[in-house]
Image (tube, rainbow, N blue to C red; front, side, top):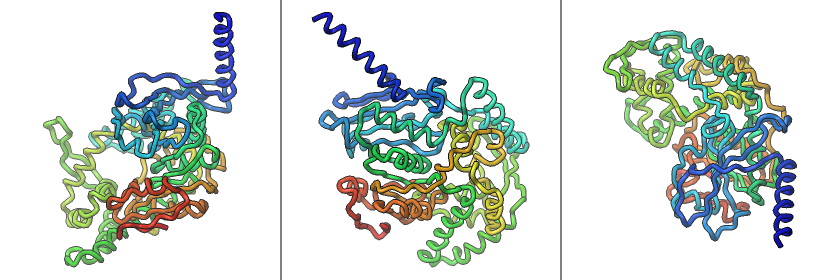
Amino acid sequence: MKIFLIALLFSTVISQRLYSQKNNFVIEPYPGMVKADSRLILKTGYLVVPENRKKPKGPKVKIPFLFVRKPDHDPHKDITLYTTGGPGYSTTLNIDSISYNSGFLAYGGFIAFDQRGTKRAKPCLDCTEVASAIKRSYREGKNKDSLVLAAVKQCRESFVKQGIDLSAYNTIESAEDINDLRLALNIDSLNLVGISYSGGLMLTMARNHPEGVRTLILNSPLPGYVNFEEHALFNINEALEQVFQNCETDSTDSKYKNLRLRFRQYFTSVTGKKFRVSYKEKDSDKSINIIYTKNELLDAIISRLNFRQVKTLAGVMIDIIDGRQDKYVREVLDGYFTGDANVSLGMRYSVYCSEQIGYADLRLEKQQNQILPWLAGYSFNNVNHPICNCWQVKPEPEIAKQPVYSAVPALISAGDIDPDCRPFYNRLIKRYMPNSQLLIIHNKGHAPGFTVDGTDYVKLFLANPYRQLVPQSKNLIIE
């Protein structure tokens, strides 16, 4: 009996090694990642895969995940996997505990999966030098772009010295990571939930591994096959147009009359101008004079294109146009001086540079400034051509820029005041996916979700992904 058990154990070890060699992935434990109700079944770990799958014997990356379910739920099917957007943000970082009745479990088993290169992943592509460079530019009145480029160069050199292949941090590799995790956990197929950038990631998964996808649930998705840089100012202008239409429809107050014209005239007139404001950093009793431009003023406006703040936006525009702008500029500066500790900029650079800017037509980008002079020169992204010229990653294969043709059922959500991923993008996705449905939600911005006036459309969709949904609110259009 003892000999038999030893032989069985030996054969099991050999088969696991062969399996992992064939699939080139393993799972390692990650204890203490998150707390969960003791009645739940929780697994936390790292997916360990090659950094570059074309070099399977090369360096590995470790990507965190958590898989939680109730005891009566089948561990192999009806599982939802969620990856956050960005790119550059961690999915698991802000999940510290899971209760028995957590919303994560509303539709069955739940997986939160990070993207390679983000927080908690190994390696993590943080570029803390960049945030420091931005603060220095404001404090010392120096050129922000040149300081940021110097910081990006320093960050890149550090990663290259560590032997990190920056070109391996891209959407196609991340889609393979998702499929490898599915296989490692022995899951038949997944309901994939994506938001913003990760909506495009989930579309890539559906194209490359349709056998592993039951449904797609896409919240303000950015399809990888559009050239965002060529559309960004048009996207913002279209979202602002919805605000102006709201004013014309909903308000009789004379102060909002001709707001569209006043906005355009003012922001066209301040292009290239510099302003000054007295600013005090948090926990400092010393004020400094900071130079700002049209960029910060537009930041104050565009950041309010969301459900909570859109009703105040017309008033903010009027304040800025009439010269009452200091408090709004200080709010924007607070954001820059606080920084965003959750984003791993190196990972963001690798994805954007390889998939978006690597394919963008700079000539078309500049034409937006001519057509929309009130938005001309606005820095709509913290990744740009000079940064990508410095970052030096390879463009993704051309397949990444081709539409995703798929019969997978999909539920897509769009906000009509979203300045980033407009309904235009969502309709483009739907065009090539005959089993998709698009929710357009009034006065919602980026990532509007799927619950409208109390009705949960994800629940209705998952109950029967092929059944046509019917809107239950005047604030919703379903296409």
